[in-house]
Image (tube, rainbow, N blue to C red; front, side, top):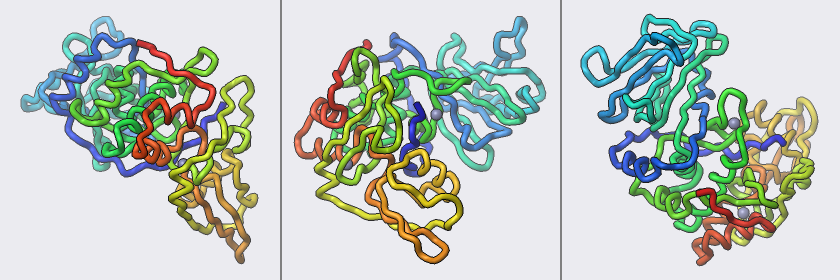
Length: 360
Ligand SMILES: [Zn+2]
Ligand SMILES: [Zn+2]
């Protein structure tokens, strides 16, 4: 099943990876499984710079080589960062070429590191990192503890100041999405709207981390299987079933159209104009919305619930939702929590006929 893209989130802000994070990691060190997240691929990087995020030493080695070339990043002069460059399907680390490099702590486990797209962008992670190349583009995969991935996603997808029960509901939806299974070939999940936003991890003392810890291991299940739970930003007053957005659920969870009190009480409208090339935009057809949004930009058609009127050589669009409106409504969840609902109330409202199960 194709997962409709979610809304475009706030610009990413890098925050340094603090020692406090390591405490969170230590508390989940015995955790179940890692997830492999493809990171920064939206930038199609040909070069990436790797450096420490904290004082932990990073060991970079040729992946699975008998006598691997090694680099050690320890903050000493000449050992502060390592530039990795794609060269066809090989990766140059410094001046040494290999098909793949792996960065870990000395013991081979996860390490705190910062990855920079030179001149553009950087993020911090706590993970094992592998870097390969595909046709001149670097493929960076961060294998991280699932609970840490959930915390990183919740911190990216929802305002940290949201009510704690809304953060818990988001944590369970995001964990369920991961539990629903891999969605890519070279890694499990990407870090963008295609899967879920994933930026640098939050502080272990943050409200997001507390919400994740309080719900550790909990996932939404549909008929005994983890639900790859869809959610979106702002439903416009009523969520939608998959059929409502032109998708066939088959044997999968069909999703349900449910009223959303917060969106009904806080109506809003977006307007945009797009050129009349191609087919007229069809409200409720999520596949077409994604195609159009890729062409015109996400802000041109931010939600699937809109009307379209011809206006000269343009279509004038007017809409009342952001995202596909399927599953949990993030604004609605915040509204329910602010009115006293707990995470169980929120999840049973937006995902009817499901149960919560522990994967601890
Ligand atoms: Zn993806
Ligand atoms: Zn809503």
